[in-house]
Image (cartoon, rainbow, N blue to C red; front, side):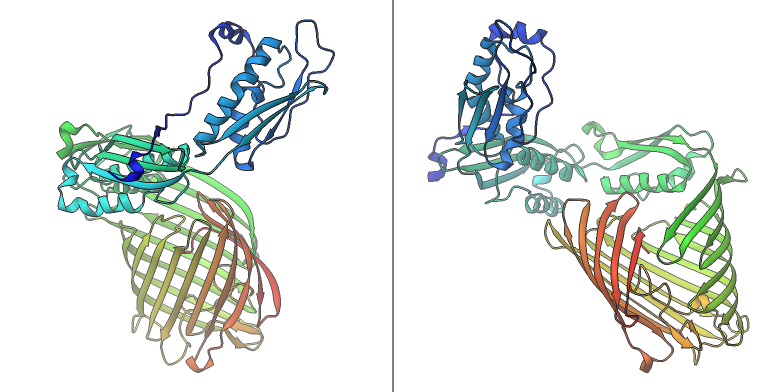
Length: 612
């Protein structure tokens, strides 16, 4: 046994409120609740009026303690909590003063200060009576050792080694970190959540101890996790359906009976169902009874949403300025669970109308969709009018997604002070996306890559051409307070020139989500007084964010990019600036102030959500 283990130790017990003597309990039960606790050394006003016979004058407490302890002291020490009580008696006041040092020491212990000293002084000459609670916190307790043991079937399973290593590697109270009661409880809860995320759904803490050495201000932590048996998905027990068949819902599951249990798979299933628009609520739980771990049922409870909905909205973005939109959605078109969306949008620089039909996934996991769209844009001196219609097949798996499609495009370009150009194409393409991120909506770690390739079909297009596009993004959490984001994208139309290629298949860049510091799609090929799309484009961005709290941060960024017709003509337009970041349920919110070196202008940009 090490020397450290021979030192006297105190086992940390859960925080509890100190109790007043029994003779005062009946009195306290009759009293109204104390005033809300203060979270700083600020004091409450004394009761007004002269004290009555048998009553103690109002008193005011000053807490002299390290700033990080004042909140817990104000919430835990009854002398502070009861300072504004109007009917204070001398006996109750004396008892509150007597127990205050012990309560203060216990409160400090929950924050990792086990050798704290506390005293109370009273100045009765003051009006109201001045009470000072002084707390010398002493040295903070640091974690000296951590011992995490996994028992049960996972201890000897070869395929569980990675999970056990992850548990130990992600322990949030490592050696040398400051020990607090809250951090200890959070670390244990995190371990259970990680252990039960799969495949050991019934994992639990079998034993845990935090041995404190107050003299050395050190903590030795031990945790034993009983894994329980590995679980496998069983049948889906779906309840609440009236309009849709249960077999259709099962197609949204990324798992089958017999697959190893994974909370991520179940969460993905729920997220997919919520995203369909079929349901107002979806809840799914695994039955973690160990007696049927080999085929654990999954209970799914749904509340169906009204199938038809009309939405209208107005808004503003720095790319396209003011906008209004009206949409109609029917998620049970023709009573076949086909989603139909009709949308009309009017913006300062863009007007469009579209209709789209999306079928639920087939038994093979593919979803078919058809669409028709008309669009008019007036950007950077170029007016475009484009009509398109097509079909698309999309795989259900979002993290490894395939798409195939074919579409017909009819396009007219009207550059300022130049001749109108018309073109058409039957364009077929394939797209592959890899998403290796921690969260599909608001990623903080990982990367995404998109590759797309297509071609204009000979004989059905104004000219034959090929088209390739690539996009990559990476999120890197440097530490708790800093994160970095990188993006690179590019594309090329493979043809001798751009004549005869619909404008929507060519490239312009600039704006909120590409190169900040420049107007929306203002970077491209200069033709007279207009900026027209080119055959190539490339853009990149680097961003560093300082997070003030988990949801709010400030960022600095640099963007570069341009669109062009010949590789020799590429000249990157640079933009850089600062911005605000807010993590929201619908994706990251960004508000940026950027300077464009080429435009020599400062522009404000804001956007919400991811672009792919």
